[in-house]
Amino acid sequence: MLGIPKLIKRYLPKSLFGRALMILLVPILALQLVASALLIQRHYDAITGQMAKAAAQELNVTIARVEEAATADEARATLEELAPQFSLEMGLDEGTTIKSRVLRQFHDFTGGVIGETMKKKVRRPMSLDLVNFSKYVDARIVTNKGIVRVLIPRKRLNPSNPHQLLIWTTLAALVLAVIAVLFLRDQIRPINELAKAASAFGRGRSVEFRPSGAVEVRAAGAAFVNMRARIERQIEQRTRMLSGVSHDLRTPLTRMKLALAMSEDTAELQEIASDVDEMELMLEGFLDFARGEGSDIPEPADPVALAEEVAADARRMGVEIALYSQVETPDDPEVEMRRQGLKRCLTNLVDNAATYGGQVSLSTRLTRRMLEFAVEDDGPGIPPERRDEVLRPFTRLDESRNQNVASGIGLGLSISQDIARAHGGSLVLDDSPRLGGLRATVLLPR
Image 1 (cartoon, helix red, strand yellow):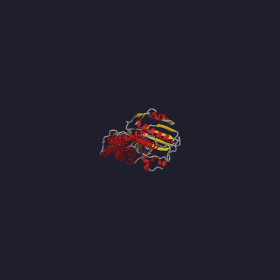
Image 2 (cartoon, rainbow, N blue to C red):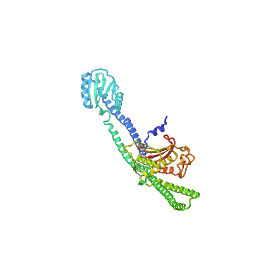
Image 3 (cartoon, rainbow, N blue to C red):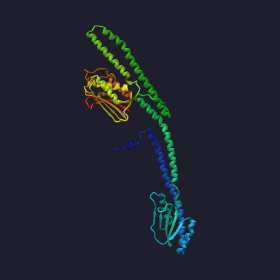
Image 4 (cartoon, rainbow, N blue to C red):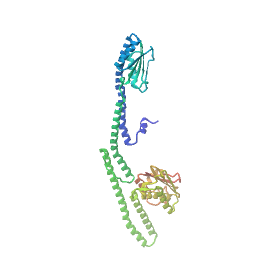
């Protein structure tokens, strides 16, 4: 069973604007309800009671004059005399008993006050009908000359239009709430812009952002701008350093290859040539790693077509690869991506799968919120406890993945992970349910 805090949290608004709006409106509504309840119970009930007392006094005077009359006809004459003085409609009916009751609508709260006050002040068998006449109260009172019938205007028993004050206070509360909402939205807007800028930077895009809003929000925005600039400088310095080192080492390697080509072909020179080729492969890996952050501009592209292109390149290299695709948004099949970088990412994963497995599959799944690429193989896989380790640069787990076929310097998965992160996504390694080996899944938000 969920606790009360968890239950409240489940139904709370998720956005900052929604929660701030709730914090603003709930006290206003609560205050409006309390004020309305107190106003109805205290103010209108008290005024209604006073007005009903005055009407009851007029009824008592009328009853006394009727009972002083000698005959019923004289009593009717007395009622005709008193009616214009009290501004009431009066009559005398024959009878000595009536059903004492107060007939009112269930929502007529002041009607209950009228009935209680009239009974308390008149102290005679009396029937009050507040239903059959919308603007009058039909009062019938037993006297010794018969039953006095009185039509009392309702406006003489309780304040007219009692809802007007409530309407005005409600309208005032709504106007103030609208003004507060507009002001609140203006305060939330800089936070939303900061969140969008941070989300775009997480996907490898640098959008224009200027800190604004309250002092605290502006300080957070300025801190983000400074942090983004430092990260961009660090990435640029790393890329420049790796590119510079790699390019600088190409010159002596080229001289060494020329010298080896002009020398006699011996076993020792063949070993040296093999080392030179390995060093050249390492330099290519360094350059790919340096380009891993991606320098191409994000643009809309079809992920299914990209997967087909990667598979076609792999088949030309003799890789046996199967393609699968699932598009849940046929009306919107394109995703904004760095196409060349993402192609390099998938190519690295396919090459890695082909190196350690005989069969490879590449599946694409596109939803409203996510793009997923999954590369699977039927190789030996990677132990779960070492999957985080293999994603680090320059790491090779040859003891779990056949060392005789392993090549490279351990940068393929690192490059793929960097490219996925540059798109705001991630690279996840787990077991392949389709082929039984390793599954490398690239998850990218849309």
